[in-house]
Length: 327
Image (tube, rainbow, N blue to C red; front, side):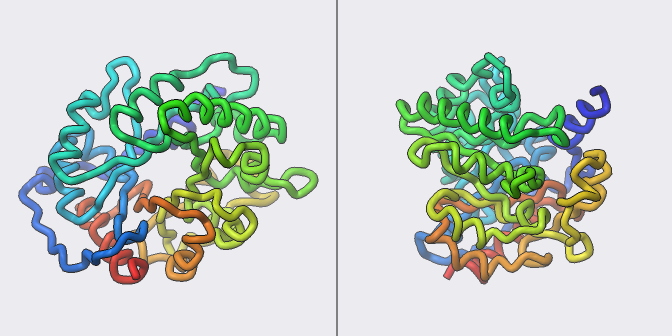
């Protein structure tokens, strides 16, 4: 259990490369790649987890730079529930920084791992999440992961229970004009005896009026499946996408007998990310399914950035999407 807990902490709090003071010098970006339009790719967002270490050092400067690059909205993570703050900024302070830089936030990732765990009786601050989301003007409270203490032994009943709890969160948040949502990783695509997958169970047992899904395009492909097949199978359920690319040298799927009972951190050695448009994922084809998916918001995300200047990384991803997907 100790090793599993360490794996979970390592995954959720993966450290990025070392910070450099140079990242916070004035950083000017050309807006020539910005295109006028109303599609989710024109109005592109970023999951701020990609810049977690920079936010910890200087959240205001980081958000200012995100806006200068051309991003229109951000997806939050890491709420300190005790202090009602993100990266040392109170909710009103964060809202002001966003407003001052022309940024919106339509969704946030909120820790629901205990709330979704079968047998748990805690509401795990769902009401608090709704309050914070409402204060920021968000439309979605997103569960970023399943309970992670025993990933290799998740059962059908665990996903059914999680679906019931997501419905409940959706009912509570609906009163504030907010919906619940769920973000996938790879283990939701592991097969049960009848071929059903965890993500299928979550979709089947949640009510479309209460719960949406945020499809991570990296993780579904890394699991060996196509995003397009899920958009065809469940039209209108994927209102949000994480646009994240896969290193061309790390394309082997991590689902199947070799991996389904493997140590989590060993599996992670088979994963490497890259800037959008430089990797193995065919985003141009996937983007053609935006309407069928029900896409409202698209977010660049890169769990780990390997080049020294992380702003340069998210700029590369932004530019590719503007040039190739924002039609």
